[in-house]
Length: 242
Image 1: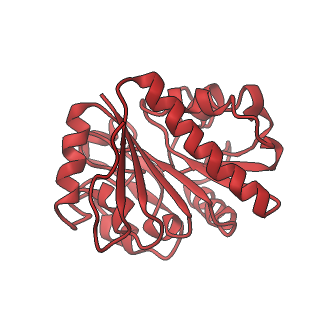
Image 2: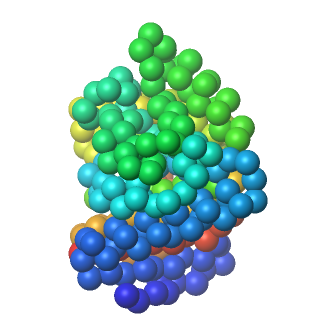
């Protein structure tokens, strides 16, 4: 493992590099569990925000084995496609399948969508829950440099980046990285800022190259993943493996 990607005038960015998936997933899970344990020692409940996509499942499975007081942990989402939480393509389904098992089955889970609720109502509820500030936020990044559900140059991106609300509804129509799910709910920089721990989970040489490119600029419209280290607050811990 090597550490130390770059020091910046903004919150620092540190790289934790691993040889394979097992080392990577367990190291990331240990880091998340340690941050949750510190929060549980300091206050009645801890709040953890998680991302979806194809990358984090092994980390979630490892984290589920952590012997924490999970009944005092609130698990919520960084973002969600406008799908029912039972849909196999939803982030909620990913979290239920890979994290909410073993010890972590006792956690309280807050999906962003529910049957019979409009997207405006879902966003309002998400912002209500966000009044309990997250302690730990686990982000991912797409090959196009998007994070959460904020895609390069998507319509309304500037408004989302500048919003004072923790969550917003977004329309990613025309953004290839959004696939067939353009309607989404996403965390904003305002929702990320209160967290004392920020992790970014990355896999593969190509994504690492995109992130290195992100470090060389400050235009979030071009590469929204820049919000992970340009948003004032905690430094960013990047966990990477091939």
